[in-house]
Image (cartoon, rainbow, N blue to C red; front, top):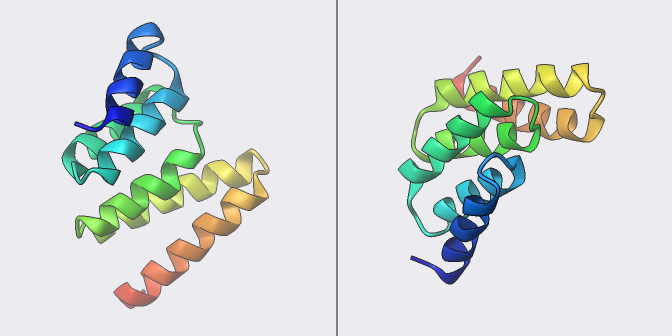
Length: 108
């Protein structure tokens, strides 16, 4: 394990419901190549904090990395809907871009 991962796991013990810590753990697992652990963390974050907008871009990217393009597209669409409903135009733009690129690859 990495030192950063150890630190984040300690932070989680102090505040297991903090969405930022959950997100940071997901990213750290990705960074060290533990994609299944990252996926589990992202999915937990999605269930417990579905309004955490940053998760949708990164979860979609992870789905693409592991070759699950259909789930990536679903996640991008969910995130785009959330971004529009909360008027988060920056997130909407990023999600729309990755969604369109994926749709082009899929031939949609």
